[in-house]
Image 1 (cartoon, rainbow, N blue to C red):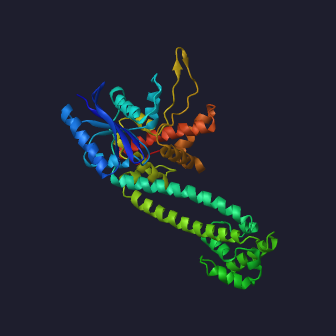
Image 2: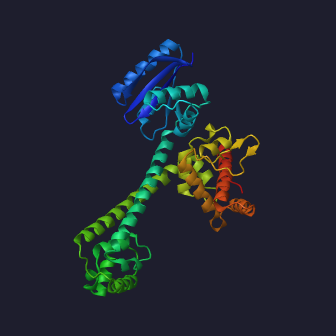
Image 3: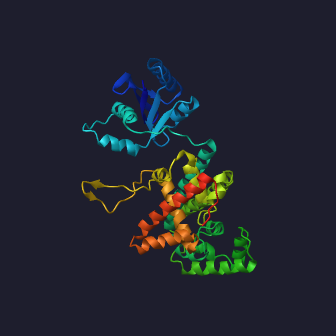
Length: 398
């Protein structure tokens, strides 16, 4: 027999459907909660199926963000074989069915049928060290997106209080700039302070600059205050909001710096790090993202499988004598991985850092390919190089 258990995972619970063999369902479908008692009940059901089938059942479930983590960790601890299915693949196979049924039991049953029909590969969980790096990298991306939104909101409120302040410092979001604005948020407060006192106050906020430099900045701040259309703000709420945003920006910056230090420290512990950074255009951040997303490259028997894992493989359409000449990439793999490769190509093209990437890009452009198509082709080529050097543990040799 070939027993299998399909799990339709949701938030805090899973629907179960089991088969002893193809078209031989076992027991009734039921739900269990993702707590100690629920997982124990599920394990008892697993052992019951194992007893009836006289072989170890396998578990099939979809990747559902973080909802499947309690089940996955429970199975890992007991060394139970499981298949973690891409939801897109599962959805596409459902579309081939003539009957359109959407329910938790039906979804669990469908996963079992997929096991018997499809050539699924047992999931190989990444090491704890790799998962730590991956979690830190994704957290950094999440905080960066929040930081960008925070900057936009900050600019909106600044435009209503002190729009001329934007030209005082070359970097509006530098700690010294934000701390100065926190101390002098309006034109009125700037203009009532003498220039030398203003320079002294700014110098006390930090920054390794000369007294002359701070005095020039004080004069520049005075000039901005005189040009500013708002001498005083009518709304205290604007000032409260501005100060809140400044404090949040400073805090977010500290968080990002702390995360970057942890990522750099952890990434350098991987032997792949030195190999990846030998490729021109790939620095610490890109290397860390690649390591965390790929895991062990030996799990991919061919570079095309790694390409498919990133979702860079072409979507081929052919019918009868017709073969489509324009094929888009599938985008079924890791979005984060595609973004990282795209960035790596862009960095390699900047100032012609990676000559081979530049030559390949120019070749594709000379063939009439649009910019984005040429970039994707370069990403595909770079991906093959990465696979080769990681598999053979060799430095990049242009």
